[in-house]
Image (cartoon, rainbow, N blue to C red; front, side, top):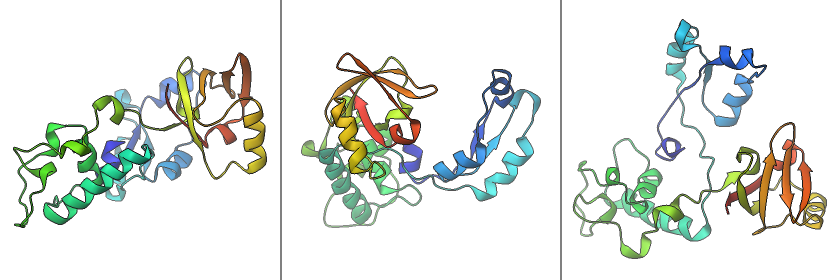
Length: 220
């Protein structure tokens, strides 16, 4: 979702829908579009189906809402570099937050030579020859520790619970805690269909998707 952080308008092509239907899988394109905040068009590339609708949707391309959250320390670093980019070397098209994330990850694309406003200070993340400030650099491994929804975690993966969304009320949190599901707790995702099933302290815990989608985790 880095393109979302960079503020790039987009349209999603939901391709191979014929293959999905053949396996009994259907995707609610309107609901997906609402969740992502961008137009979603079902297509079958091999048969040219949906290409016209996809072309028409380009006029409605939108910037999706970022779905990833980082740990507080990394968010502070991102905000600081974002402020520097905004004040000293704003990009004509790309969002400063996305460029800050690239810079922290030492991505070479974060140091292009686009025109910059002359200032007394130096904007390190945008300078062609200067790396980001040393105290703002985080290793690529840490940068990759992005928080994801529990429902988006593949089966067989170990994750660590990071927090619970506001949609989970106090009673639900108490029930989850009673089963050993709490922040900083490592669990294994056993399956995602038809419910999210976790292995938590040698006990299998089944959680409805309506609840699991509001639980955030990171790779353990």
